[in-house]
Amino acid sequence: MNGAARNWLACCGLVLLASGWTGAAAGQTQTEAVQETGPNGKQARFREFLDKVKQYDKLRNSLRGGIPAAGKKASAEEIKKHQETLAGKIQEARKDAKPGDLFTANAQKAFRRSIDRAHSGTRAKKIDRTIVQGEPVKIDLYVNKAYPEKMPITTVPPTLLQHFPKLPKKIDYRIVGDDLVLHDTESNLVIDIFSGAFPNAPPHT
Amino acid sequence: MSRILIRVLFSAILAVPAAAQQITLPQAKGSVRFAVIGDSGTGERLQYETAERLRLAHQQFPFEFALMLGDNIYGSKTPRDFETKFERPYKPLLDSKVTFYASLGNHDVPEEQSYKPFNMNGQRYYSFKKGNVRFFALDSNYMDPDQLTWLTNQLQNSTDEWKIAFFHHPLYSAAAAHGSSLELRGILEPLFEKYGVQVVFSGHDHVYERITPQKGIAYFTEGSSGQLRRGDIRGAAFTAKSFDTDCTFILVEIAEDALYFETISRTGETVDSGKIARNVAKKELVPAASQLQQAPVRAWPPLGVQGHPDPR
Image (cartoon, rainbow over all chains, first blue to last red; front, side, top):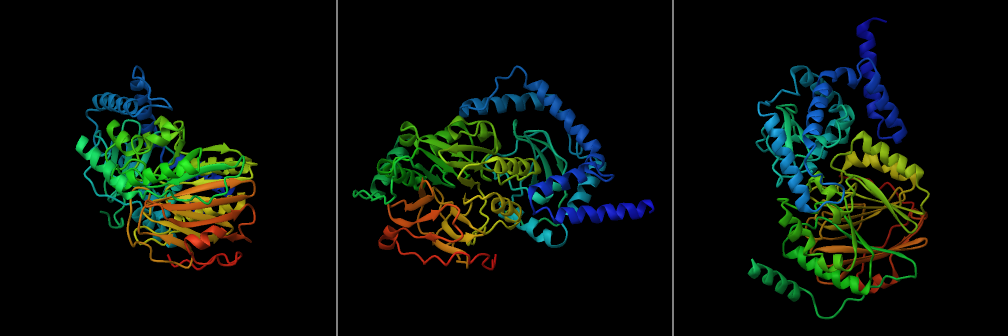
């Protein structure tokens, strides 16, 4: 079997596995394991992106030191203070941050591929429906600035999350308009934006 | 500001009839009693009036805790917002030691997980036990593989007699605004069915709706404890009872093998009530006798009539 055929079979396998993920979670875990470790697994395809996410997480961890922790049972004031103080430190440390720092050209290519795989066949309609039901918004976001807290955070379709690489705690993907956004939920800062990641995104408000 | 407060309180007093409503739940000894509210955190008049009705209900039916189905704090999230959209309307209940357990909606921010009165203990999803009941609070905004693995493990390991899940997005909904979350249903319902979840509470659509049991699972949408989208219910084959003309909350009592519920409107009308039998939800789900006099509802279809065609 040549390389192209092997890749094609791997792709078919992934699609079949992904389409069957509505079954028991044990099956899901197996599917995920294949996707993580296979020759076209997420770890390999997203290595550069994950390295940069790891660097960001490390930076955040280092800046978190010295800030009073909000903890697990905080008041609204403590949560706000922690968030704003941490955001200030990150903004200072990343003052030159710009779109594409994490969503590099390679990362964008890998995400585009994952989106195309997930957003295919009968799943596409359900994914679009999930996005619409999450009250999608089109707002102007800027790297290293706050995500506007008055706006809904939008729902990320589970099928996409299955295809995207796992992120550290308190870093989430967001879909805003037709962009894919990396959101630090602890500091409420936009880490990076992949503009036009969803060229066929459903209508937003 | 004080003028606004006086106006809100005055409106609340006007909206609450003097005659106390009669809660028909059995209040059996040792039962698990709780309230369910969803899409509550507007800080506006309807939330305050519904909260006042909930306070009155608590006097008759002293529930120990309340489930929050998401959209707990709409709009801005300053400390003052937490006060006006949660702490103040539910102050009498908080003062009475009612514990709130929150799940996150799309208008919430993930950091609400650290807010002490929401009892999420810094987790987007978590479980807790009360008596013979295990509750699973999920984050339906972000159903990632980690959460699904966690849920599977929790369900597998639960030996509790009752398993109840609550989260924001409804798997079944006949409301026009959002409707059924089909992708989420395709993922969660097989788990619920496999591991014996009997009841699911969701919000998001700003109405009240009870669904004809699907695959042995009773579904409720309670998204109108502060928000309201009047006339939004379109009706579907799976709708057993719906109400979209006023705000509501649900009172629930679990006594051994039976779950009793009573849904009450802002003005004190019982708009729905009934009983769900544990492990026989597929065979038996009948309205409580008291309901027949108070709020006629469509008869329950014979159970086993599952898998209604879902037009949504």
